Image (cartoon, rainbow, N blue to C red; front, side):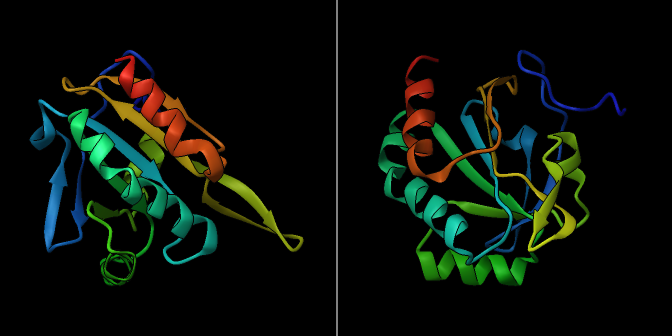
Length: 157
């Protein structure tokens, strides 16, 4: 097992990933803000679209709590740009085609769809504080109440 996996109460390792808006995002650039990093399986699929819309629709609440939201999947930037535009997402999406961040956060799991097994992203969300410390994680996320759960936890930070 790799030792660079995240743990609650510990500093999250530095990362640098390509992002929508023709940028790259480094964790160290986001000091002084709380960060929500949510991993989702695929752009423009039903559950992922609803999840993105829920984060989008609560953006004002997140901003008032000094939070940056970043969505992460293995999709390419071109797909992310389309998804972001179509859903009018006010936050950036990071492309993790090499699965580096997925591995650090241990979100790649064996899935089974129509009897076919494959490795995919398990819908997961992570709360990282202003100093880069992992404060909370949500794994096997169910989309419906998830954003409200995240907001509740943030209010207690």
